[in-house]
Image 1: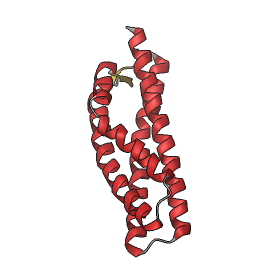
Image 2: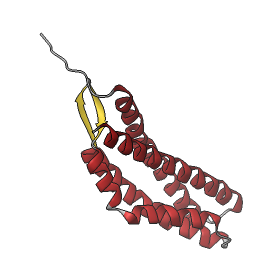
Image 3: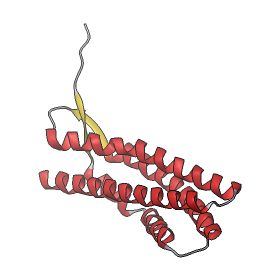
Image 4: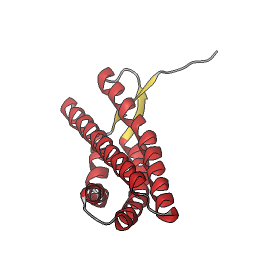
Length: 154
């Protein structure tokens, strides 16, 4: 006989808020990335700055998501709030996709830097980085909404 218990993912709002509040460098790097994308630098300097920031953000994102997944999200029996549980599953699933997208962008920047900066490819990369930055900010907004809704329940 096999007994299974359905579970869902919920937000440990206090820990998730603490993780977010304790890492201002992560958010500063995201802001610097936006500024670099909007800067009117030479292609070589822009590529060098993008490469450095994307690699820095990749390291920070790995740590941030690792902490969030370890302490900010919990599997609980499925009798928990259905909507918040579904929302938490979706938002947590963004972690893997965002990290893989960022890794791909960092590798593209490194390749462009080492093979020689081609202006058209650099423009495409900058557009992709801006799109990624927007998606990461949307993810952060969704997590903050989860935190706020979780606090309202208690």
